[in-house]
Length: 152
Ligand SMILES: [Zn+2]
Image (cartoon, rainbow, N blue to C red; front, side, top):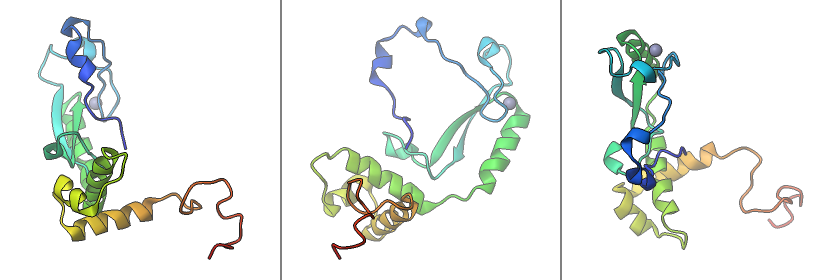
């Protein structure tokens, strides 16, 4: 999960005061000083199954900014090599929905909110399970794993 969600507080700020460092997503070159001087900086949306946003229609796409057509070509090639994992995208949608419900959420609501089919939700869950760090058991507690499976 990345803090990709837009920050509402930004709307209150004067545009002229906006200070941000814009660098090329491929080579890291800082572009801000001459961002609008030429045609070289390019914005592009690339397929990325780990990209999840507040607006679900943007899910699965990563916005990138490149300093040149050459860097755009390179990053497109790089993104093209990494597999687009549908289960990862579904898992992201599920996690986003679950986060909205501190009280818990039923699979039925999950289905409505994510727009996923029950099979996709199950596949997304399975993906989350697979990605879980090794050594972490179910439930909290520093003693996890130390009891020697006495509870089973
Ligand atoms: Zn670059």
